[in-house]
Image 1 (spheres, rainbow over the protein chains, first blue to last red):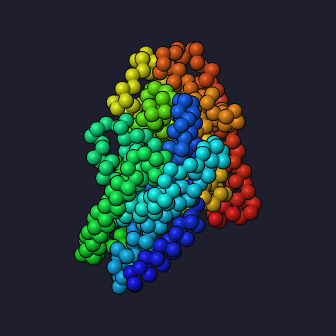
Image 2: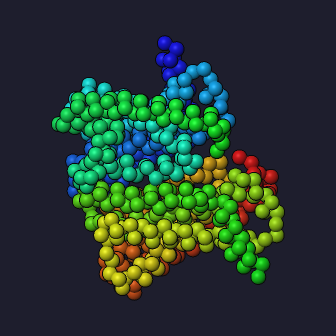
Image 3: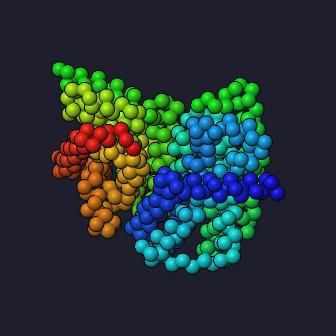
Length: 257
Length: 261
């Protein structure tokens, strides 16, 4: 019960904090709108207007990914810069339960991406908002947010070993956008990249959202895969975090930037 | 002579001190690896949308990534003086302002060219981009002019950073809007008229158009108008940047607000 309360309070706190940041509003609202707009004009000019709703959904999930990447990638580093890392590591609550709400909050910011991109597409480009399976669509969104939030936990706990975590975030934004099939179908990418795509929650979350919205495919299978990957990320993230905590305590490097 | 020292040596020292991404651990992922995937992403999106060939996206994005240096490094080279609380001592010196200001552009320009060249090489290796060998010097010229215009644009943003609270947010928005407005990924003819008009006043637009023509086999003489226009736009942005720099310096002195946020 205490753990749930900690998760809920932490999630609310971090969500409010992120919402007041100009950078995160830009990442979660402006960037997906821009990517969606570029894709709309490219599809229109290339005479593929039927793909506009496809692009809307892809850009929305890109917004979730981008916010998670930059938010989670810098999570521990920011605590370090602000001098709060020692305090939260020394607190009696497990470090995992302190960090997890932050990474989940970063992915939850993606709700802004989804809402703004679909609204933008409808109002500015007249893209019809017809959902084939509304219930599955409503389920796919929180599952995708959780999947990406837990991927964020892995990112947060592994990037911390690298002093220039923001450089890694800058670097990974594009490859995952490409390899997860958010805007470009995986079938166009080289075969060797597919196993990498399948190990990423954005791939399956995107598939779940897209299949439930556009119809066709296997949205339930994609949802299941997102949940399975979420569980794997949770285990991996907790192991990495424990390792980080052990090394930082042993080498007395917790507050060193 | 002093002005020349300020231009060359002062410019280099400022660049090394104020450009936060200069460390290889930051520079390589941000300025070299990330842009390769930007080129790949738009090339694949282009294939899926059936809009243009890979070469269209390689040229557009390879020239555009010079703006990573042009916009961000220029902004940092001016605006970070304020962040690091060195703006007041700097402006208390009698140093020639034009040399002090424009000197910061030279290392940025060189950096932008390097990143662009890297983008072209990556395009050749990964997407089989093969321009005619004889067009390479002219292509390099178009890239230099585009990188210059971007640097001037970045200096204007940096000057705004002498007053604005969060200039990096403005720089981010400006940089990303280039994908949409400057013909990087969408031909200007396919954009609404007002967007195309806006794009024509931005750096890169004419430089990218010239680079595409040259990569397609055109002679420099036949597209020199585009290169001259890009150069003119760069000079206009440089003049605007210097005007803003002087304006904010004088305003900062008058209101004692040089380093307040």
